[in-house]
Amino acid sequence: MTILITGGTVVGATGRTAADVLIDGERIVAVLEPGSTLLGHDLTASVDTVIDATGKYVIPGGIDAHTHMELPFGGTAAIDTFETGTIAAAWGGTTSIIDFAVQTAGQKVFDGLAAWHEKAAGNAAVDYGFHQIVGGVDADSLAALPKLIDEGITSYKLFMAYPGVFYSDDAQILRAMQVAADTGLMTMMHAENGPAIDVLVEQLLAQGKTDPYYHGVARAWQMEEEATHRAIMLANLTGAPLYVVHVSAKQAVEQLAAARDVGQNVFGETCPQYLYLSLEDQLGASSEEFGAFEGAKWVCSTPLRSKQEGHQHHMWRSLRTNDIQMVSTDHCPFCMKGQKELGLGDFSKIPNGIGSVEHRMDLMYQGVVTGEITLERWVELTSTTPARMFGLYGRKGVIAPGADADVVIYDPNGHTSIGMPVDAEGRPTGKKHHMNMDHAAWEGFEIDGKVDTVISRGSIVIRDDAFHGRAGHGQYLRRGLSQYLG
Ligand code: URP
Ligand code: ZN
Ligand code: ZN
Image (tube, rainbow, N blue to C red; front, side, top):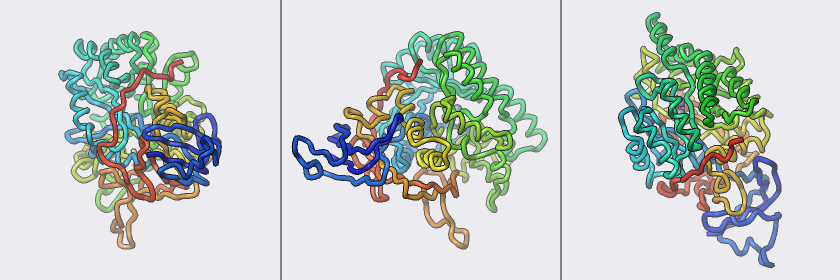
């Protein structure tokens, strides 16, 4: 199958240019001057499909480097499967995800990994790779870490939060980072002081403060700043590269910036919820069905932060200054009914996570519209840097000959209404998103742009507001070591 995309503006991390893009099979084979012929042949007559992208942007497919399909959490599991989650990703212009395989204490790392391959194989609609969660750092898991590289897994995640679940203490972190420094593995860190948070949780609950809002009160910014600093110091000592996930506090950004200023290989990721949503939004949330428990739809960790304290504003700025390098979703969706509801009367039992895999490209494009970031930075934050950070660059993250034909045509004159609109009687008029959740965490968000066409490895998966892909098209991505290290 050959495809020629004509008339569009090709946008990359370093610039934009009017160009046609020629795809042959699964690869991009040429980026040409508009209207080019090849050896005298009119290209439009020689290819199987011509897509007119006049007035639209042609960008490398989005890479969401932080998703949790089917993650077991708090007695339930994230509700998107690899099939539903990657179809939703495709709708939103994301053509690769990197999900987290899970090892828990006492389990063999390679058994945890095998379980994740089983969940994904034959089910994904777009390409997928894995990071490895190491929930039990011991001699066995430490010995397994270097072997992950041969499996195409070059990053692993530790948790300074969630004591008794995924938590690692400082001694475990130090040992894992020593292995990472020797091998080039990227340490991904959930940086919150879990034991101290658990004390605050207990005290708040004892005072009868049980609503979702108190989740954010317990997980105060000091808990994030302190853990971020500690992770940076342990990385500094060992020489291990460090990537801090889901950064939400401006004080944590300052810790990362200070470490980067002295040349440490330290990186940070934020998520759309920390740019757009706030603790005040959560406090004000209410519905007829759930009352103040409505705020549970935004319970995630790290938590939403106070707008009054200026975290969101600072986070946008850090995207411009490269103090934060990437935007992922931390897609971890739970339904209100039967899942978030587990925390009725006790916020600490609400499964943590928000579903956004479908909306990241749109939500970040809105930052271009409002002048927070440039068009080029949009592509860099959502595709090019994720590819470089996690060893996929060249194949992914760029429109260039030889790269996988993962291409999104984005219409700046289109419009996207996110959410589940209701009719005059307040009844939902139909499902507007394709994720498995029974609610929309981004209800009411309006985007001045629209995903027009999505191509995954040379196959058109979204066109004319319809899904043309299939579960099983997505292939496992073996990743190399990070290409972002200084
Ligand atoms: O709330 C979140 N972030 N849920 C997913 C698990 C994690 O810590 O990333
Ligand atoms: Zn986390
Ligand atoms: Zn996560």
